[in-house]
Image (cartoon, rainbow, N blue to C red):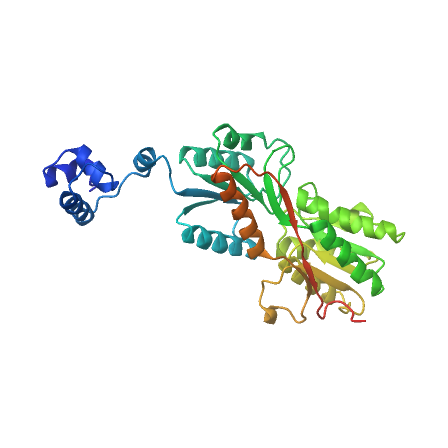
Length: 336
């Protein structure tokens, strides 16, 4: 049975106002009475209303965080890092997943407003979102927010993400030096900013070298996971497309590409080289260690939270921050 403020007041023999003051540790209550009420409330199992506490303190102590999903290993790291850092700062995290549903993301951002969150971190959905104007409700209610991993065009807000353009430019150069001339990229929706940057980085390097990168060599997956990538890569190889270099959006897609390539009788890296983003899957899952682009997830989180807390403290600081990546060369590309 739910214990109410009224129940605690009746048991303590005081008014509801006195109980409220005691539980919110405010002045106006004798210290001994305050302690007795607090112990009694805990013994009775009273759970205070967050809304009531927020109204009393004018602060909720809550930060909202929205992610596309939790299936991506990088996303899991983001959750751990953000929650741990917020806990150390004395905040609690309200975490939700959009599941790449625009309407649901809109609803959840409105819920953040309803909960009176003091700040919000948004990892944009990884599919086309032609009208993200609903995010501006945070600006209307003066709730600071920051984008992480990407951003929505037309929304004025800070953003912290990897420098995907330079990452793909450097990856293409690495493969070109090793003889790569026929490239394929396997990833998600090309209209989201992170993939647009990757595409442009790859295309710009190849253009500089006089190499054509046909649109069909960007394999746009409905979901950038193992199953979709394995199917798409097999279909491409079945068409006898000329490929000697593959770059993938994440390590599961890279593993799918490796399996499809070797099952078609090609050797990695002698016939086809592979570079992937991140390295989260266990090495024993793959028969070969994959060359990968390392993103510094902890640095992204620290930078995003630093910006968010500056805003929460009244320092309006809107900036786009693109963090360096690192190409880690392993066995799936030719060593020279």
